[in-house]
Length: 237
Image 1 (cartoon, rainbow, N blue to C red):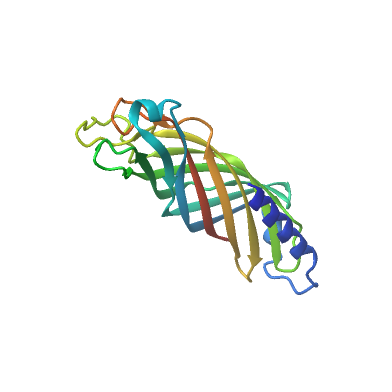
Image 2: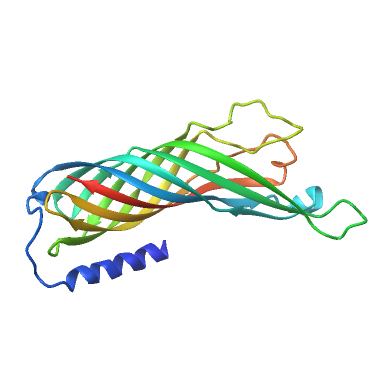
């Protein structure tokens, strides 16, 4: 979040420092509603919390999350709230994500002192419904910058929440429904007939998404929270 705030302030100073030039798409800010589309990529992982007794009871030395790359596509709707600098943005999105959990166990083989490692991968195909307040700088020539604050509901279409567990080869179960907070920042560039934007966002679950079902891979875990970095290209007309 700190990085996004710094980027937002730098973008604001860049906008203020520009010299006056002829404006493209002058009537953009006169419209109340704008539509467009979004394409982008993401990196997703978990905020992990292992049980306090994970080492004593399960031999777990370390539980960590590794980020993995994914992508997203969405439909953009933006509503002007009385002034060009405050807008409400809704972008229904289809996103693809993978999160990786890495376990470091004490090796139970007494003839070896090396640690034992295990990885669990959790793939998601999500329908995301983010609702964001956009606070934009005043337009300077063909450039503007903005900050975002809001939340999103996520439905994981690939969730195995209700699937039968395979206790021989177990998998991590997470909840199908998730609510997340979001913050972000972006840049907007005005072309003659459309507006192009590049946006960076961070999202984090409000609640625990982990389902404890008593398997060898879930027993050491206390809580998991989804977190994602998003970078998007946005086109609006």
